[in-house]
Length: 149
Image (cartoon, rainbow, N blue to C red; front, side, top):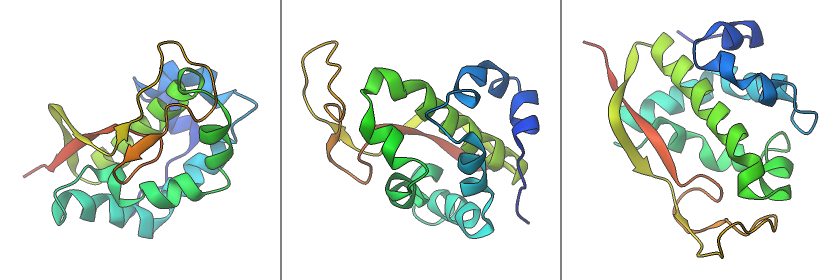
């Protein structure tokens, strides 16, 4: 069973409602972001990542996401302070899909997706906060989930 998330449903989520700035950011095609995660095969990879690989759900799609023309220009083209809200909104999208698929967050449990490069505080150079190792180039940690029994 796949989840067909809409922007309206995202906005009606308690946490999603706090991301109106991201939805309306003209550097982002938020509908394309939603569409990316509405793909049933990607949703299955979110579940498989947790269930079979013991990694955060986002790990199941992170490489494809970061290489996608809908995400890469934003993540690579701005500094980490600018992209933080967008990366958080992606986490909310994943949470909504996981919850609708019968999973819930493990409170306080996040796992690594990559190790950040050392940078001077308040660096605003695009790409300066890129990871030096791990699965992800732009995300350092992601929420863990467990199946509701």
